[in-house]
Length: 260
Ligand code: ATP
Ligand code: MG
Image (cartoon, rainbow, N blue to C red; front, side):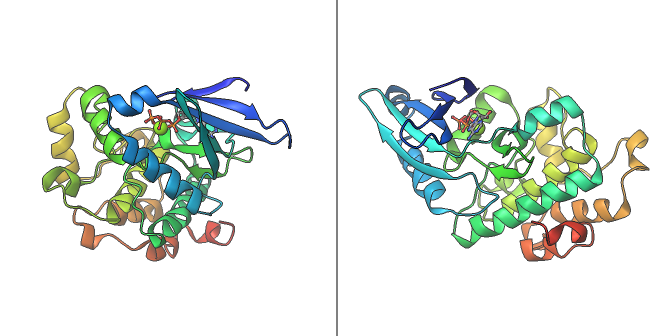
């Protein structure tokens, strides 16, 4: 077991190498006490079941798991590029080519996720990892309900919640399409579109009713094609949002679709 890669809610993630094969992986270590305390055994089982089953270049692979008396260990594909969140923090925002590439990779990975009857529900830059070539990988499955609680209780990061999750709590796979829109906006602008600092209530309101606006100093530099796709992804009513197939056919993504 090598250097720590990150801190999770219930344990830490380390770089690790399997002795026999020499293969380098990420090892997510979760304390059983924490699983009990927070009553998340079923979420953990979901996470393992889903992530070992899904096979797509845009979905972080889970190779398997094992456990001892105190801990559960998840063996994950290593993502040496780290979190998209950290990349965004250091670069502030990304250009249209880079954004288009990631949005394409994410849309294509979500097609696979949805085809397997899974809704991720927690797409955000902290849960998107990058490999050594900066290709995007969806991570963190099966923790959606936990993550939601956590956000509301501790962090107040509501920025990626879809309007229908706030109003009636009845939602489907189209919440991931909404989150794709928030992500695309955040990549191009550097902050999410409906964020009202220090006010949960105002943020809720902006998500449900607020228009999509761009900072004046950036607006000119963002193409009408990019804005058009964002507007479609961020339709307030889920039924007005495009399917992922339609998303991938949008002109903004056309230059990237064949590579994804
Ligand atoms: P949380 O609920 O707080 O998001 P978690 O317990 O679900 O945490 P993860 O998000 O899976 O844990 O992992 C925590 C952090 O560890 C990630 O945000 C990332 O920085 C790092 N990490 C996780 N998996 C990998 C990986 N496969 N390769 C590289 N870094 C990783
Ligand atoms: Mg996480």
